[in-house]
Image (cartoon, rainbow, N blue to C red; front, top):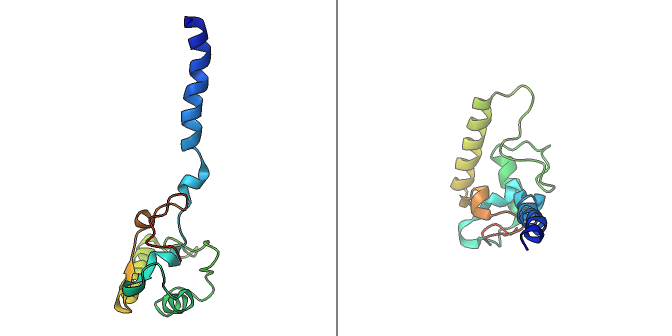
Length: 119
C-alpha cells in the first residue's frame, strides 16, 4: 500500500502544478480596453476610444487592436521617467474625456475576465 502511494503521489502533485503554469492565466486585455466610458462600461465605442487615445498622446503608429501596445511600450531613446510621464498624461487626458481608467488586474486575465473591460 505504501509503495503504491509513493508511485501515485508524484502524479497527483504534478497535476496541481501544471494548471498554474497555463500561459492563458497571464494574458490580459489590450491596453485600450482598460479605458472605459463612465456611463458605458463594457459598451464603450471602440473607434472613438482609439481616436481619443491618439489625441491624448498615443502615437498614431501604435496598433491598439492587436494587443502589442501597452502603457509600458517605449522607443529605444525613452527613459523610464519619460514613459511614466507619458502614461500619466494619457490617463489624465482620458479621464478629462469622461473615461475611467482600470488597471489590468481590475479587468482580470482573459481566462477569467471581471466584465469591466470586455471591449
